[in-house]
Length: 90
Image 1 (cartoon, rainbow, N blue to C red):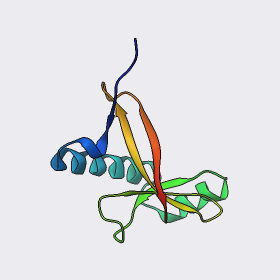
Image 2 (cartoon, helix red, strand yellow; image 1 turned 60 degrees about the vertical axis):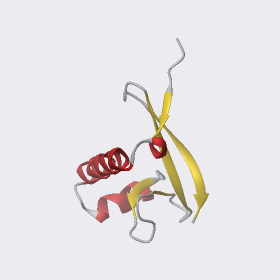
Image 3 (tube, rainbow, N blue to C red; image 1 turned 180 degrees about the horizontal axis):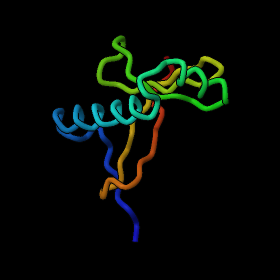
């Protein structure tokens, strides 16, 4: 069976905000709110995700080489998986 994907940006604004808040909270919990942890992750060659007040309501993916992209998260219908899609470079 083909799993339907839901683009977070197609949700009503209040649901988008909830998703982004939950995603930001997961990132915060994952890294314990400690930017040194994020720096360690980048040093290990893994990109990080975060919110930036210069891009309200959007999620930034930053690579170890300093490249940054605005990304959209597309959830599966049952919210068990997601796909990350690049919107544009910043």
